[in-house]
Amino acid sequence: MTMILTDLPTAIKRSDFASDFLWGVSTSAYQIEGAAAVDGRVPSIWDTFSATPGKIRDGSTGAVACDHYHRWEEDLDLAQSMGLNVYRFSIAWTRIFNGVDAEPNAKGLAFYSKLVDGMLARGLQPWCTLYHWDLPQYIQDQGGWNNRDTIKLYLQYVDVITRHLGDRIKHWITHNEPWCTAMHGNWDGMHAPGNKSLPLALQVCHNVLVSHGHAVPLIRANVPDAKVGIALSLHPVKPASDSAEDIAAVSRHDALRNRWFLDVLYGRGYPAEALALVGADAPVIEPGDMEAIAVPCDFLGVNYYFPEEVANAPEDYPLRTRIVYPQDRQRTDFGWEVSPDGMVTLLERVARDYPTGDLYVTENGSSYDDHLEGGVVQDTARRDYLIRHLAAMRDAIAAGSKIKGYFAWSLLDNFEWAEGYLRRFGLTYIDYATQRRIVKQSGEWYSAFVRGKN
Image 1 (cartoon, helix red, strand yellow):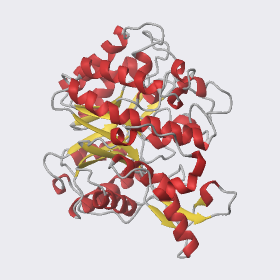
Image 2: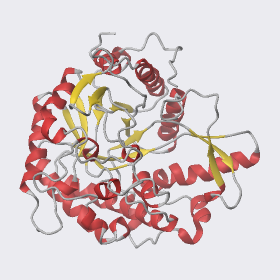
Image 3: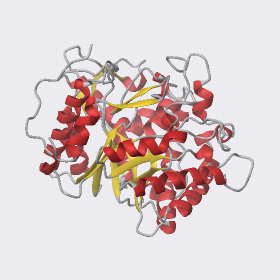
């Protein structure tokens, strides 16, 4: 059931934020582009995974998605019409290298070149995510991220992209949510490639972080004045009760869910508590890895959706913790808790405990069961979610967090990974039968807010 939020702040307005604050949206290649076999694109692990029966809830794939590959001008027009000044997108590695030819695919490079030119022509500052989960299948066939040779292939890809587009793109995100790449892809099997092995997941995670560490100086060498960072999916974690056992469970969970990434990126190494917890499943670390991962970055991207509530669990539970879902909380139609306070808690914690420099909320959004009625989508719950979370971000800034921008997830409804097309996060409704775009009530509100008209 959609829950309408009633305790809205009445004074949230554009002028509450700095004049140079960045307002944008985030998208990702596999979720919107489609054109799966067009202009030299080769399969990714998500093509393989989604074509495997039982992996995607509605049996769909991203083969067509929003057909953004052919409709990108219309989509950038939407972003421009909303008054945004920044657009976050990702590049499909599968459009650049095919595993056979040594030279990059000219048609793939040309697509992203005209896409970036289109952003700039519309006053949209391009923010490029270099890896958003869609590893080429031919690399997975060679061991994927578990194979350290993938780090070299990733750096080759990064080198080509930054040389080709670095004259126009100054903001680069090396990886989106390495937790999902590693853990959902290789521990719980929810995402591609669908493995279920903790030691494999931890090694994949380590190798992804090493690739990040080596990519940062490479990008800076290729792109004068580049700003480079990484986007992490982070959650504030709270105990299910005030018992000592649940409080200890929170610490264990946080050690792997949050600190495993934050600590190592900021030079503290993997948390001792997490290493003790995983024991022999810990990744193999080669000389120089930890120093590489801890390379100073220009910013940190934080993807925030919901808090996690944790309880102690028996020995036979993974890591002796379990996430609980109290029934008395406001939730989206995806079941995720609506907690603007959690955003404040998270952003204040990151700003307090780590020398991140500038922070950006690189993803934040909500999924509701939207319906197109009379040519409009009255997604009041998503609009209210936006209002409350922007107010929370304002409060975090007032408390000292150096937040410089906000990217709503997402511009468009899209292929929502293992959920297929069952979940809608967009500010714009996609009628998948016709590919018609209809800006929702939430998109209209966000546009008016960014323009200072509400």
